[in-house]
Length: 530
Image 1 (cartoon, rainbow, N blue to C red):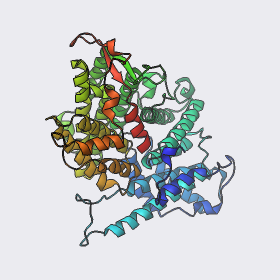
Image 2: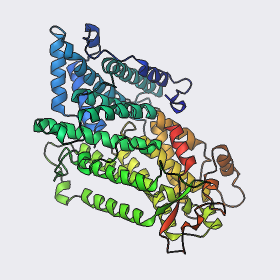
Image 3: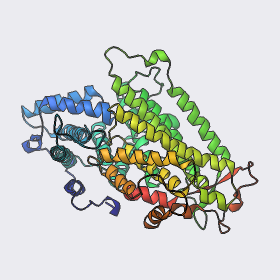
Image 4: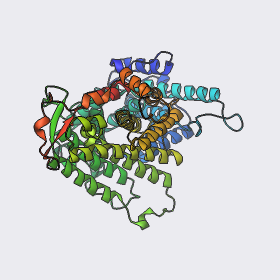
């Protein structure tokens, strides 16, 4: 674990979670003892756990089937009634990983009320709520340890083991262990490549049902890899893949009520994200000598915008499709649609983030204004505002869960971008709405900080900001003090005569190559707090 993942003082859960990864890998061919079954709950609790994982944890990341998990439960319970067999290790590891993941989601449900408090009448007290959270957290960690002890992440060369490993990846991400999550992804990628999940020839002799399962696992793993490497600023481990192999199904779902609709749309969006990162965010190629400036062709930005527009138009459905279907849980569909739109806004932020400095007032005053670059920087703020609205909309519908895949990172990313805009545009008439959005994010984090480490870290950052909008005139001292204590972001983005790429842009309105910045301070903020 890196220094960013060290537990904060006085947080026993983070200490326990850190030590949970010190378990030695098991022998692949060894049997398991009766003690391994001691943590099994009742069938009713397992069914509830399956509901939570399939409907919430795997929202738009479907790689598990309820029927498969039910069969695993039946097999495991059948073995408890007879002699323990040597093949029981992997099904039990999958079952425990599902239980751990479900408890991780139960930790954040329900959150505090809209005022961030609990009342005495009809509600649990704050102390009782904390005790309940602690109990659920300990239960989730206990199941995770059990699954980790039964499964060697470096030796998962079968579908069942890969499913358990993907559940572990979701668990570590929900627990704000990003570097560990990345390590597990690398192990899963290595195993999937050995199994030939990303090549058609390796699956040609398999039954169609197994081909479908392998394709879904490969697609979800590709999405996870793209998300995590983008957040950490690392090269993708799955590169140069055939586009069709990164899709969960060969044929696009035709109905929004299809269980694979969200996952398929999500996979198409992640392909756009991968292209965006490759073209707009240099990882391996050198950038400018000073200040991290480099050039991005405007034509690439336009091409990505066109892809995003086509994707979004395909996401829109006819009014007849929006009608409730008999026997269908509308909350699952609404959650899927809102989260897809949040992921869409995230891709927009990644696309426009390198040009955010062009929307800062100090930069505009110190250099020639590029209208195209300014529009891109403003679009990043617009996408950030959309994330705030979507998060509040999900919370109002009781669908927001801080454990959802990458929700906390997107919220923190949004907060960093908006705070940068507010602190660098003090006194600007357009900053009030953005400052209000920052306050709304702070309130959102305060309602969920008790359940999620990343939300708590983001809240601590936002609470360091002065309350209320930045004042006009010479009374900027609180905001200047904030800049000095954290990082004066705007200073890093100022265009100067020393900038090696100042000549990239031509006359105003005629920019073919836009001046971009790798935002080292912003990336440092995210990595330190996620």
